[in-house]
Amino acid sequence: MFTAAEPELIQKRYEDARQQYALLAVDTEAALQTLSQTAISLHCWQGDDVRGFEVHQDAVSGGGIMSTGNYPGAAMDADTLRADAEKALALIPGPKRFNLHAIYAETEGQTVPRDQIGPQHFDKWMQWSRKMNLPLDFNPTFFAHPLANDGFTLSHPDQEIREFWVRHAIACRRIAAAMGQNQNCPCIINHWLPDGSKDQPIDRLGPRQRLLQSLEQVFSVDIPREYCRDAVECKLFGLGSEDYVVGSHEFYLCYTQTHPQMLCFDMGHFHPTETIHDKLSAVLLFQDELLLHVSRGVRWDSDHVVICNDDLQHLCQQIVRGNFLPRVHFALDFFDGSINRVGAWVVGTRATQKALLAALLEPTRILQSFEDSGDGAMKLALLEELKQYPLGAVWDWYCLQHNVPPGAAWIDNLIDYDRRVLKARIQ
Ligand code: RNT
Ligand code: ZN
Image (cartoon, rainbow, N blue to C red):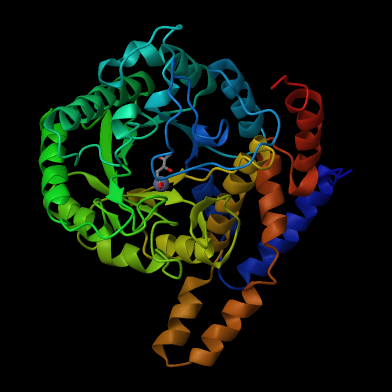
């Protein structure tokens, strides 16, 4: 249905676009070169609605997050998840990484408590990573577990429960280091916990004191930085933690300012009208690197499939304008179980790459000179005109060079996989 244009035509369109951008002193080749060196980490949990493969998993609460929808074909085991991911990866140009959670351990039918998981439970993932040339990232799972049912983990008032989660986090850091060693580049491990309260806790300080203590324990274990980099993720509110989240923005901002771990900004973790692009130039003035969870908040949900909207474009603009690319890590974080999950991965990743490409194709120097000379209307005018520039022609050329379908052509591959594979799965 969406037959791709002939390669010669794509090349010709690119050549025209190259000249059009060149008139603004924008070097499309340089932009493409940068794009082809920027990896996006795809999150495994879009493929199975954040279920994971733990044995004897109790029906427990989502722990502050929840994937909704029952579109057919969700992956129910690791081989299927990998197969679906391979399909998605084949439709996304350029370098990618793959982000796992602890609940995706492969334990051969054995129940392995979360504080006892080790690198061996991720052997198959690491083999796959090598085969696919796809570095892995990692996350401890502080939710969907009986010991998380109170809504508190690392900040739980019960010391034994806290210690269980501390051991879990340390076990995960060791796994991350094994992944880093396996792939010869650091594995980014992100620590997010759902801890918080639904309604007006009297004590807002105690849980934060306990979280701080637990984090000190988790990070007191020396793990080589060349293999593992730790991040901590803040949040304003979640499902069941509407009134209070222990690991708030202020908590982790202060924490990372005084500790070597990096901050993780999730685009959906702030007030519904608050965006993160303005925070980069503030935080990166004081800190070395930043993990981004590219996501899309819609009303109270923080995890809709990413599209190329203003928020994402503003974010990428800030990264490029501030020369922050070498200091930020792009990870996707959304989950939608109501649509084809492979499609969700591809839509979100391609949107992120397109937003980045648009930012890389910006005539920043001209815009800056308008700003400097007080020509605000001219600056705004050029920003608006740029929206009609042939980004798509440059993008298609990039896709062609990376052997993935350009334009809408990939939707045909998606329809085929949907009908032939996903809908044929017995649920
Ligand atoms: C939840 C956080 C967190 C999770 C993943 C599954 O609000 O955004 O990053 O989405 O760890
Ligand atoms: Zn997140």
